[in-house]
Each structure stands twice: as C-alpha cells, then as structure tokens.
Image (cartoon, rainbow, N blue to C red):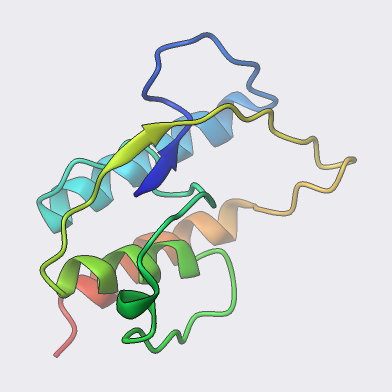
Length: 117
C-alpha cells in the first residue's frame, strides 16, 4: 500500500504549482508504462510486507528510489493499492530538495525498471 496526496480530492496547500504538475505527469507516465493506476508515484509513504521487501535489491540512491521500489514490487506480480494521506509540502527554504533534474531521472528510471532484462 502506498499513500497518495491526491486521492481524497481535498484542497491542499501546494507550495509550488510546478511540483504538483510534475508529480501528476510522472504519476501518469508511471501508470501508463506499468499498466497500473498510481496517483502519487513520488509519495514516501509505503507499506509492504517485509517478505516482499527482502526480495528487492535496491540500487538507486536518490529520489528515483521511489520508482525503483514500486517497479520492482510490481515486477513480482503484486498489486498496488493507494490510501489517501495528509501532507503539507515544505518550501526550499524549509528543506525541500527535489528539483528539475530529479524529474528527468524519474522518467529515465520509469523506463529503466519497466523494460530491464
């Protein structure tokens, strides 16, 4: 199960419009490429049984680990369920670290783990 900031249709404060648009696009791309429904691929809220997590060898060491975890979970034939979460994003001054280059890395990682041998 993963958390989604976009499932409950509540109006929430978005610090940056561009990050909301980027997240929606990346979630859409991930969903289409992997043939699943995922409304928030960049969520850090994940709940998996440890027996499944122990089978995953993680490689990524940046924000793209979000895509790697979900992709490898799906490649084991497991289904993805989402649950609405509350979240208020930080400003860059408060410690937000994700940027444009991370978005491009997400795109690369989506295809990397979907079509790897």
